Image (tube, rainbow, N blue to C red; front, top):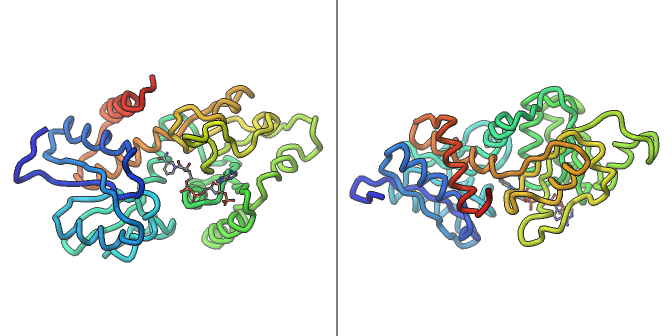
Amino acid sequence: MRIDGYTRVCGVMGNPVEHTMSPVIHNTLAEKLGDNLVYVPLHVEKGRAAEAAKGAYALNFLGLNVTVPFKSEVLPALTKIDPLAERIGAVNTLVRDEEGFKGYNTDMPGLYRAMESDGVRIEGEEVLLLGAGGVARAVAVLLAEKGASRIHILNRTLEKARAIAGEVNGYAGRELVLAHGLEDWKNLLYPEGEGVRPEKKYLAIQCTNCGMFPRTDQVPIADPAFYEGIHTGYDLIFNPSRTRFMELTARAGGRSFGGLKMLLYQGVIAYELWTGKRVEEDLAREVYGRMKEAMGIE
Ligand code: NAP
């Protein structure tokens, strides 16, 4: 790696940030594309995100990624915001221009590109969205924009599901999103009572923290009957690479995918925004291989 007076600096600010995979993505892209660019993790104290972003701009950083817990907290430090990021209310990528940083959300386009690459379609699908946190809210916006026919948000705290449904329905101009408690899956999937196999199968997107390392034995819904009702289970968790949710989906005969490709593509899109270059699929696949290698998975 060459570092000289012309080296451009990018990084990811978060807390914690020590286990981030993003340096693997961006430093591999810089190496393969021959860009004089280095990407580093930046541990920022809670409550200091805006200050850190302004400091990075003053230090001539080309761009930043922003991760938990700063995706909304950093907003006051931005001079511009992309319309999609504004609708989602969270940014994960800051791009330098003459006046300051412009904020983008590449998590959702990243998820969309990952789903396309996995052959999972959204248009016309009735979707079960598990969780109602920051990511679920963004996924609901994505699903609405990409033409899902209906979105059911199931969350442990019903109020949070209701809040997202209200917001997205307001902007969609119709009752596209319905809010449910987590246990409501039985009424939804088995309207004629348990034991009567569901005819309709759903795409389910797992947006809770359940099953994330180190609590890998957790799953938001443990009953195997739930998994009988889904044709595809998409878990946004990437560590572990194979979650219990994915295992239960596969065991019931559905297709299952994890969140590592979403992580790859949110990074690829950020890199494209910073450099103005297009990352071709072959290179994206190579980076994906490096990420798996770094995580010790095949
Ligand atoms: P968040 O805002 O903290 O929301 C967490 C959600 O999980 C809430 O809906 C919460 O329910 C639910 N939950 C937590 N523990 C639960 C339990 N024991 N039982 C049932 N529900 C539970 O988190 P987030 O920022 O949205 O992130 C969610 C997930 O997305 C994380 O696992 C993260 O790894 C993943 N993610 C992946 C990528 C990627 O690139 N692949 C990027 C970003 C995030 P309550 O509302 O009831 O508390």
